[in-house]
Image (tube, rainbow, N blue to C red; front, side):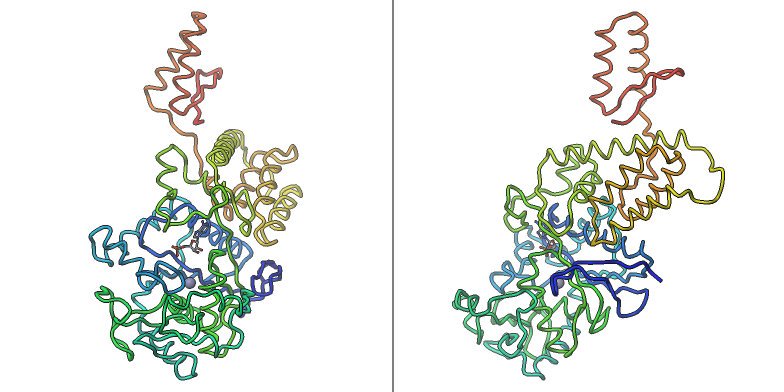
Length: 468
Ligand code: AMP
Ligand code: ZN
């Protein structure tokens, strides 16, 4: 029996115990990236959060079936059916075919995920491989009177779906009054959204498929409904995404899925908060954003960014700053040095029985992560355990392995970094300088070694270089 896990459900807006449809199993769908550009570190925060969820559920004893889509068609520049397809904008910008754009940025996305130690989902599905499932779902909506054809496109009729917007707590009257009707005159109601576009919307659309409504391509929202149902069934356990998806994308996914099946779609909805730069959300479309590569180019370890994400609850905003990243990087380095020390000091355990102190530390950690993924408090348990007088080095290492299966900071496998030969020569020269009482030269050599990322430690067997 898995341990009880409590999660904040956007549906109902409270923390509740997870009760999966099938005991011991969790079906999880996460909205994946639109692969038209590099992911920015804000996007990656959302995938770190989802990874923490998956790892926490597995740690609790669940078998998790994690599905994520890749949006390679249908996501228009505005989430509300406005503007061109993002893939085509990128194809034009880079003078390539949109499938090459999709392949390239999908690879980049997973490279960045690997660098952040984000576990690859069990199923990664491309929208362009599931067009038939989308068409079939739209036909079910048509049969139920929830979809209509207009000007060549097919739209979801929001007026016919009674509970539309309840999930997001939308004030429909106000939204309707404020909507810009001129955006799409084909719609019956301003909140209706496209399920299928034909060439009547955009000429020269590169990505097109035959459909009962003419050659065209799907809307963005229908992709997730169709793929989630395909891989997880008409009702499944958890659906995740960034907080921006609540009012439009997820509201529309619920309307389409529940409208077509007559059943609840996801039982639990979880949303990751935004990474913000001076209170503005970091956005791919604004053209200016930070990627993981920029962090790497400035000498940061990607796992420092992961640790930075762990330092705040997943639901709130997280303010980006280089200073905060510096803080996370020094903490990471300190933890790594501790691991090296513990490995040097650890002796084989005297007995197979776990001490009370270890049991207590594990329980304290579990309490925090099972309480809606409280990672800041879980990190506090880690720091306390490492500083504890009542735990032996081998026990601390065992705890680190236990904690890291969820935190994913790769601490247990950290080994002392070998310094390059030229730094070892500098360290020897420093010994010489000290013997000659040439303190200024000794200090200069120490600084030079530090600038290359290593600290000199004088030990009885000679100088030792440790990664800073
Ligand atoms: P996209 O590739 O634009 O479809 O976005 C991928 C994921 O990143 C979605 O779940 C978004 O909600 C999420 N996202 C977008 N911007 C941010 C941000 N600044 N902070 C955190 N998550 C974000
Ligand atoms: Zn989605």
